[in-house]
Length: 70
Image (cartoon, rainbow, N blue to C red; front, side, top):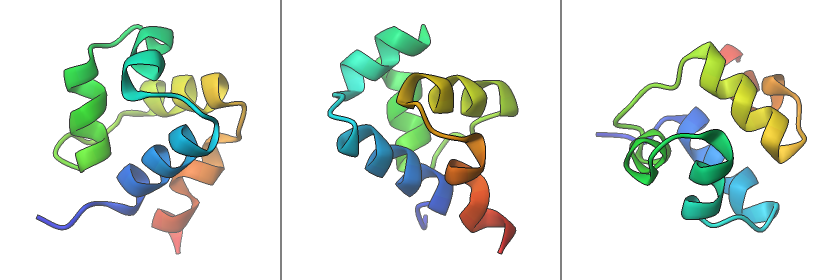
């Protein structure tokens, strides 16, 4: 399965901001298994989690999903 661009962007921004998967999962209030599945592209993030991730990482939601719209 090819990893989605949203999944790649979430992982890239998480690393850029210096968070581990554990830290980000805790801040989002989700399990590390859920965040891991989202980052692997095996679970599609809904709008609510995209907004939560962007808020925690201090970026605009469009920065995570912009590549999809192209």
